[in-house]
Structures are given as C-alpha cells and as structure tokens.
Length: 375
Image 1: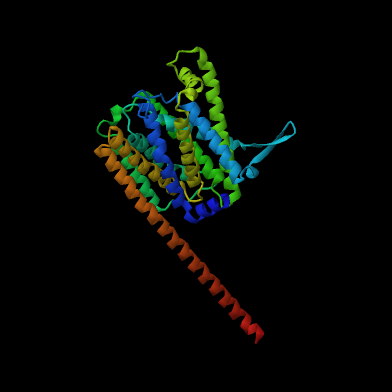
Image 2 (image 1 turned 30 degrees about the vertical axis):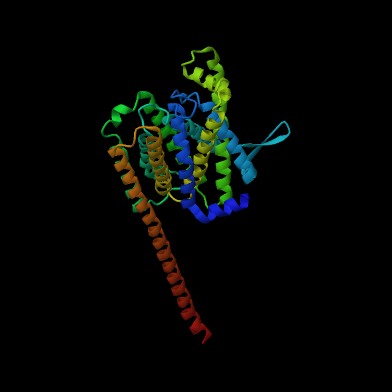
C-alpha cells in the first residue's frame, strides 16, 4: 500500500501535494476554531484556549509523524548514533535547527486560529502573505544553492504582497491583538530560517537526501515541542489556572478525560497532514519563489472554505470584502505560477535545442577535419 501511495504522489507531483495540503487544512483550521469557540456538541459555547488544546494536538502530531516515517521506511535514511548499544536516529545540526524552527511554526499556526476577533482568512493572509514576501529573499541569500527566479514567480510574490496589504485595511490593524501580533511575528521569524536551511541543505536531485531531511526535521520538531510542553505543563501545576503554564497543565491533566480527546486528536492529525504535504512542497527542487506561493495558495483557499462553512452552519463572521479581494489576488498569482512552469519548459527545450545544434556542428567540423586526412 505504501508503494502505491508513493507512486501516486510521484504521478501527481506538486499539484497532488497541493491538493493534499488543501484537503488537510480545511478540517484543521475549521476544527481548531470550533474547539476554541465552543461550537462542538456538548460544549455549550464554552471553548478551550489555544494553550489548553496544545498537549493533545501535539501528541497526535507526534504519533502521526512517527507512524508515517515507520510505514514509509524512511528511518533508514536518517543519521545514526550509538547509545548504550542501541542504534538510534539523530538529526544533523542543520536538521536540528530546522526542526526547532518547525516546532515553533506548528504551535504558532494553531494558536493563530484561536484568537478572538480574527477570522481564519485574515490570519492566513497575514501568515501566508508574510512568507510569500520572504520567498524571493531566501532564494537570493541562499549560500549554497542559489536559484534563478523566473519573472512569473516575482509577479506571484507581488500579488501575494498586495493581498497581505489589503487584509490590513478596514479594521485589520485594530482587530489584531498584541499577543496575536507576537504569535505571527514568531511564525514568520522561524519560517524564514527554516526555508533558508531547506534551500541550502535539502532541495536536491537526490530523493534519499530529501527523505533524510524530512524524517530528521519532522521527528526532531515534534519530539522537541512535546517535551517542551511537558516541562512547561509540570511547571504550571503550582501556578494560576489562567497562566500559560497553568493552561498547558490543564491540557495534560483535564482535557484527556473531558470527552473531547478524540476531537482534539483529529485536529492534531490534520495539523500533521498539513505539515506532511506542506514540507514536501517546500522540498521540491525548484526555487522558493515558486514552491512557497504554491503552498500558500492552497492554504488560503482552504481558509476561505473553512470560513464559509463556519459562517453558513455556525453563525460565525464571514470574510469581508477586503479579505475576499486578497484571496482573488492569490488566485491570480496561481495563474502566474502555472505560466512559470510553461516558461521553464520553453527554456529547457530551447537550451536542449541549442546543445544539440552545438554538438551537431562540432561533429561536422570534426568530420571535415578528418576527411582530408583519410584522403
């Protein structure tokens, strides 16, 4: 079954990965909002906080990550270390740093959808627009594997910046709280360095290198994040219930027995799904100015669907005009990304023709030189 799954992903390529990312992000973002708004049956409008749900959500992500790497057989690609006679997987220094950045990305993404007064689409436009703007910068400053940035990718990044700007119009600048701004700021900070390490170390023609990077980064991020939550939760045992450590301890000590463990576990599973497909998109060998918009467009579209479903069936605030215009700009960016693929194909075809022509001329010249000698 796993071989069939790999063959399917190989056939679909980055389009299939984008669809998987979209399909996981709709329930992930929607269910996260519902859990913190108290919209599930039996909650009576009283939701959990973003920090309270983290222990179960991250636990689900850990289980899903370890299960996938095992079923895919990717442990064999990881670096190894001997401990007490056992051979254990370990990250290299750069996958360790990338994993730490990913752990920050995981927790800040979930928290972004829990803040009151901020819609899913608005949060997505801020986070996705910020990453889109930094994508060309990462390509330009990448030390080991700089990539040519084709002009359609620049246009797509510019359209994404316009979408980000529009999302801040109307009441966007006042709706975002200080804590939400800090959360999104950390999200963008860790994302920049994660993309930079991926560009320098992971984007490769070698599939084994891609698998090694993915496996090391993913298990490192999830284990570090869950361990950090356990430590903070234990500290929170003797602190006020409304403090951040106190809320995390509540997530460990109370929520597993509250009847909503399965719901929160599903949120973590879908969160892992977005990490799986999203990371594989980023690891594509093409430049970040192409792969990042492909990833971001999928998530923004899923945010629109999730926001519509929440408004239609749960009476939540629908997307406003500025947000929808921003989404339209993101959609328009997709056109330029598709055109980018056409431009690359034409460029590769032209270069191939030129190489063949040069080779043919070289053979003709050699033949002319050889002919008099034979005569």
